[in-house]
Amino acid sequence: MTGAPHAALLPDGKRLHLQHGPIDLVIGANGGAGEIARAYAQARERFEDILAALAGELTKLRQPVCDPRWQPTGPVACRMMEAVWPHRACFVTPMAAVAGAVADEMLAALVRGLGLSSAYVNNGGDIAIHLAPGESLTLGMVGDLHQPAVDGLARLRHDLPVRGIASSGWKGRSWSLGIADSVTVLARDAASADVAATLIANAVNVDHPAIGRRPANEVDDNTDLGARLVTVAVGDIGEASVDAALASGAAIADAMHRRGLIAGAALRLKGVTQSVGAPAAIAA
Image (cartoon, rainbow, N blue to C red):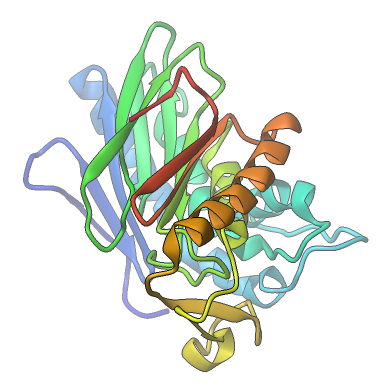
């Protein structure tokens, strides 16, 4: 961890950019000018020690979650543990929810005591959302993270139980055990969406000679995945393998949906998309 936190309005004069080490946030708010100014001031103040507090618990946060449950100290770390705990039957560490948990914590600081009509904190595509009664927000979904283009929409309303959206896939900024180009998840908060997207993306998988994999600890010294094989290339795997991989991921997403852990998900691989749940929120 080097340098000091950076804070500045983006060139449009409407959005706030906060950056420190690996944390890079774009924040937007709608409401009265005075309230937006106070919201941004609150966000700046809260951001000052976000990274330092996480760094203090990093060793334990990189360990797999299992019984008995240990209790983190910092508020972001607590959000991470809360999000991953329902998934403890499989391999998962609290780091699977770190980006979403930071977004949730920053959103809470942003809106505290204010009457903003809507707001969001975007942490590299993991987004925490605030909507006042009667408000709505439409977000673009990117199906291929190597070729960014909006190929779907998430239409969120105050009356829908969705305040978080997150994406994962082998082409994203974190390593994946699966081959999904992208998995986008809608959930009650960003941390819950973050871990679910990670695990569903891991499950979009098949064995095929056109898939390149390497031990995670050979490609990333700081990984929490150990020697587990992560995807580094996906060639032509054929239509049958695409369908099988998506079906595998969709089964995990459906199980999460039935448990109430997510509102919906959109899984994409080789130009094919499969959706689970949230028909009122996800549109092609």
